[in-house]
Length: 168
Image (cartoon, rainbow, N blue to C red; front, side, top):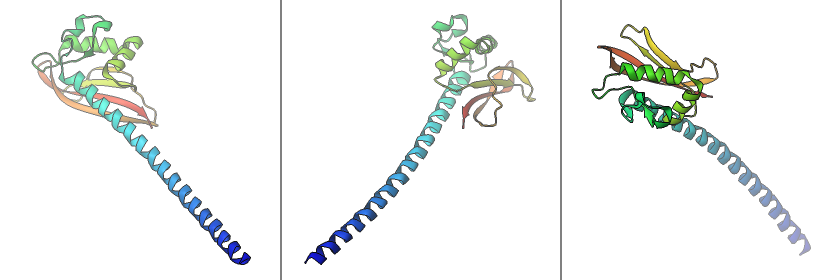
């Protein structure tokens, strides 16, 4: 009788040990997948914020519509379009000036709801730069989210490009 109890308890210890190895393996796999999903979720959030910011900037008048004449504390978000959908020279100049000052640049990022640096460039139909503003990041470890739109500016078509940079 004593011999059988020892065999049963040895089998129990071995099966418990195997069970713990399986639980540990499944837990490690789960945590790895969870970290990967969190990274992808953050990437999706950043891309969505970049697209929303570009749309607000390039397709709306801004809020309020006459934001270019107001102080920074009164602007909800800047938009470069006028009421006909064309880019406004006055709004473009104010946005460029606004985003070149560090304090205003940080406020502009807040208005757009992005945490990362951005860069805006407007090119004519020949691809030559008309105006640009923001912070252009050239580090290799940086990923770019680039949104391009064809816009009507100064009686001609132009390409507006809004880039949001994020660390890899």
